[in-house]
Length: 484
Image 1 (cartoon, rainbow, N blue to C red):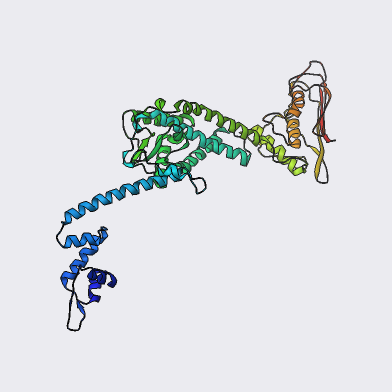
Image 2: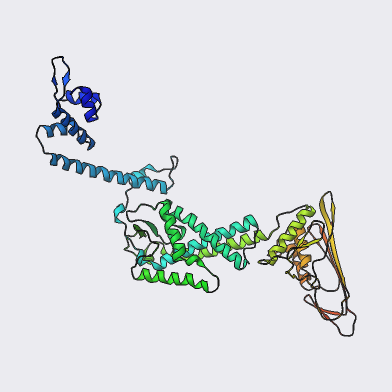
């Protein structure tokens, strides 16, 4: 065979064939024309060399094998031992890479001495699976995760959309549940893929990985999380009798765990660990008391965040010098926030009139009527004052003297929320809770507030007017606020 033919049969480049010839591994004959003539034996020898080089055997090893100085089995045994050593080195390098990524190490802050001496504490194939021994830790971890997802959603609603998150109603609760589970389905697979744990699991030192210690893929994490939402949480339904579904799924999950039965959402190759190889209970682990105390502490922090977000959401968006449009927007925000989860029924227009948005809504204003039209004064586009008044001569009965419109008006103009009364408005609030006949006036933040109430034939008590028998009833109610 010519050099071209031997190249085609072996797949080796010409330079390699000539090199093996120079090393004495093949010895082709030469024809009368002086060209090399490769035999079938040369072709087989080259193919054997090619195979052994794939196993990273050296030319010395191949030469000794060809000379009969050692057997193929001896050579392969030696190569297996060498490859196993390299495999262990690669596994340790892989674990060190993961450790560096988990520690978020970078060039400027990395401590090389620490990592040069670091070694994985447990080989990857020795993860101690403790899934059936930790039902309560799994439950509390899941509860904490749901709390965090729900808090994140509620804070988002409050900060971005200024929605009253304290009173949501059945439809709002259903939306919140759906959004919380959606966040869980989006974030939990990412946590498991990136860190092998979630915030709740991390608090209890729990990790969820494959049995070899590697982290779940995003697809595996999403599939598992979706199954947990449906079969483990029962979609956390809270409507009517359907609220029993999450309770039933929770009890069934606990029973399966105690009996050592696999959960229906578990992956085929998943493993739970807590860094102790399953040899220590939670209370025997370091800082277990601090972790247990952190659990209610995180709950308290979430409640504080929710209250802070609600206080922020209650504040109108516009402040300072307001245009009539901005004042109306502030007023409508306060009215909507206060009436949650229902709608206020009336929306203030920039000209001081009202638009009834819900004919079935009956909010209580002065004497149970609709809101009073406002006379809004402005200069150079900014509101400088407003007023509204009411006069009533209806006889007999008990009348309501609601001051809701006054309270909304003052806070809308000054840009204050109503969830907690602003300190400067506390005297005004006290007077509005117990209105009395006569003229009352307050100066707040550069504004003059005046409330005048004239009563005849009524006994007033906490906003309720009881008609006095045998007397003519008359009420006049005037409110104004002017910029000083």
